[in-house]
Length: 480
Ligand SMILES: *[C@@H]1O[C@H](CO)[C@@H](O)[C@H](O)[C@H]1NC(C)=O
Ligand SMILES: *[C@@H]1O[C@H](CO)[C@@H](O)[C@H](O)[C@H]1NC(C)=O
Ligand SMILES: *[C@@H]1O[C@H](CO)[C@@H](O)[C@H](O)[C@H]1NC(C)=O
Image (cartoon, rainbow, N blue to C red; front, side, top):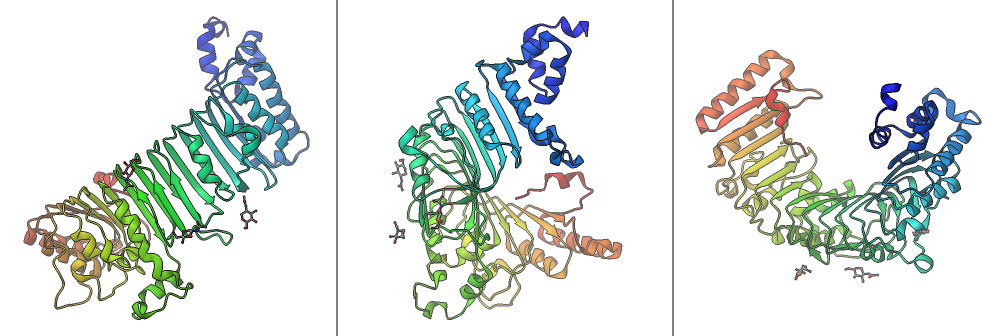
């Protein structure tokens, strides 16, 4: 104790800031001096789950919630109006939401710059509007357990977050046009991450001159979900873009001039897939009901990302791309293309996509199996065709990685086809599937597959390597 007591105040404060509030407060029982120092700890974590040990059933016991709230009140009172950098708040039902909002207001008044709120209250809860008028907030995370309206009281407070660079919103519902009004109030925003978002708008525009990283991940399958009819991205500084949502009917404006990396995961319903594969699709009338006919507008999204160096496409995105094959842009900067394949999604877009990536160096497949149609061209050899095209033979791709290999004959045939057709291929790495059924469980089969791959490799002068999960190289597998 004496050795500790001799430490300098500054150092003690530093040590205390690594402890959770509960631990730090327990420590402060030990010495009066510590208690006083505790008031100046610059980061606070108020977490009811740590405090309440819900796994022991304590949560239900009367008095425990009360003592957590009293404790938080006492801590904040002790800190007075000393500056604070960071508050992480994790509260769930049973905790008084008025008191929670008082704690949030308290740290906002004390100039908090990093605020992380994990709030598990029911849908009657509202965030304190003061969150949206902070001159000091740099990072804000709001994760709600159920959808909450983003109640911005524009008229009373005026929204302004002049320092905010990082915003993460989860399970938030915007009122009509609110998102469009909100973004300009964050003039230096660089990272925007939105999961589980309801727009409540038929047309959405993401417009920001400062934004560098954007992640939109909607829960497209929720029954209450409102899918925007159109979405625009006017974000010319954006470098990193992840977009996962049901495909919109239109992408009127896509300005992503400086994009380096894009991950596009457009989603289709099974019904939309079936209608898209209907051979009579060209003859169908657009009766306002057949939205599938309009998904050709997704071509505007793909054209907008044409400057990327690294592109990831989900299997549904490939299907969507096949509906706008005429407008597939030339990806002149693209070096790495990562394709997620799935057994019930087609590869019709692969020939034109490969042809339009003239500088591609690395091609990654998460799985090779796909829905076979007669429009895969030379991208696979699933159906024998007279005129297969030259998308592979004209490609300059040097390295091919195949993930999720199960050792089936179908996959082996495709690998052989790739080795024969890609003229510049020098390295092929095949990563065996880790989970589920593979042919490698049978050592005889493993030997057979390995021998076959060896023969292919020798014939093609490409270095073909089968990588098993036990191989140190397996850790270098490129994952999506
Ligand atoms: C969103 O729209 C629905 C239906 O039009 C409405 O009931 C709901 O209150 C709206 N939510 C917000 C936050 O505006
Ligand atoms: C939404 O966008 C569509 C297509 O771009 C357009 O036809 C429609 O008028 C827009 N609706 C509203 C309410 O702005
Ligand atoms: C994209 O935005 C930049 C910067 O605002 C602008 O100069 C450029 O003209 C825009 N491009 C398109 C295609 O709208």
